[in-house]
Image 1: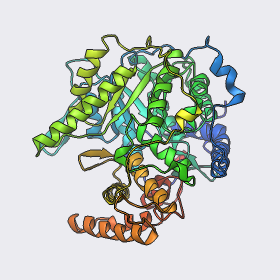
Image 2 (image 1 turned 90 degrees about the vertical axis):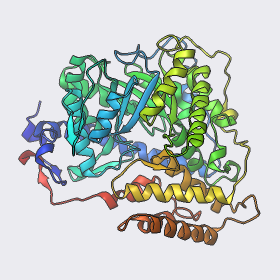
Image 3 (image 1 turned 90 degrees about the horizontal axis):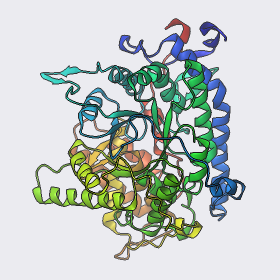
Image 4 (image 1 turned 45 degrees about the vertical axis):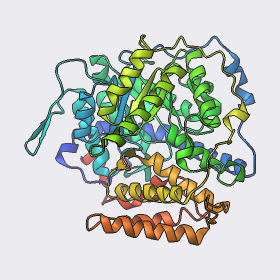
Length: 542
């Protein structure tokens, strides 16, 4: 094997490296990142090119369907995914959130079964956020993450087993521009995965929980194959038996819904199931079919989990997972407690109960919450209806879902000016926070992240593109959308502290809601606003 110094030739760090970060950005860790990059970045870029070709097909009216070339995988009932790994047998309630130190402590102290530490949609990928997050997880794995903030102490509980830690790296489309290999930015996915794995894989294995990952934003089984290859290389590199790593795939794109069997198959030795990433799934549906007038959806509030295309997606996911012996995880309860209005809070919590009851009755093995206060509600529902650690035995043989079911856009409801304004408020509110380095934001008593902001701006783009009219007859054209955007930005800026970035957010959003330009992701559109690239430092000198 080549020496570390040899591998590090051509590797540069362009972000500031504080003393606290040096235990993460070691020469050996950076050499591991370089190996991942050189092994997989060419394939990653070719898969992103493949996404663009697929989009061109959709724009020509070619609708997705189950792949004929992988029919043998779907129809072979004998193969299975990996058995549930230690700490992942019972996942009835999972909490999710970013990797700042306070969140890490609070999440690990919550009465939940797992904590998904998120480098993706609930994090703004500033250099500081990404590296500090790695420091925090390094310390959390070793149970040394306690800290003091002012007069308040944050300490891990010692009165029971802590939730199993699962890490979500960024999606394949995102780059980490603060580290370059041979002149190219490294993949954000490989950066997040690689640093966490290098420093923590053997330690988590020694402690009996991991290393485990959530895998986002995939659009095909070939992208799952790339993750599986990365897992194998990483395990071989540290001398870990293949099959120790587990990855739960978020089915949060409409194209991935047609390849669920194939995705589990590609990861089968490392698969820990699939998850219904509901908000990103709605975003993906709008995004992929944005040029097709038959796919125009009503107000976001009308697109619930019981409308035809969402119901079909849930049923197929549960059936597919349980047929293959892996977990079928439910979606996010984004509500947060409403402290100053008991009646409103009671209604919100009742909505959470109804949603979790729907999930457990459908056959899900667990669910997500965004706030520790919702954990007890979700746990009570799942305990009452799922007395076993999971319900992999619920086969859902009654389910028959085809192409038309997954593409059934018969969604009752209309498009209202209130719905337009709410989309503008959510889009601006999230984007303004993101360019300040904050990746999840409470708006209207919901914890909004990148996925919900994407739904908002994509709906606005779609409505203007196809010249829809609101319920009261007002045509939603470019001028009207931009007028409402200015009013919304002015109002939010006036109420916010001085130095806010609502007008900067409005400049970006204005280019995304007129039915013309459409960025692939808001996060890639905004990334340069939070990138502070300095002079390159050779990795070998750190």
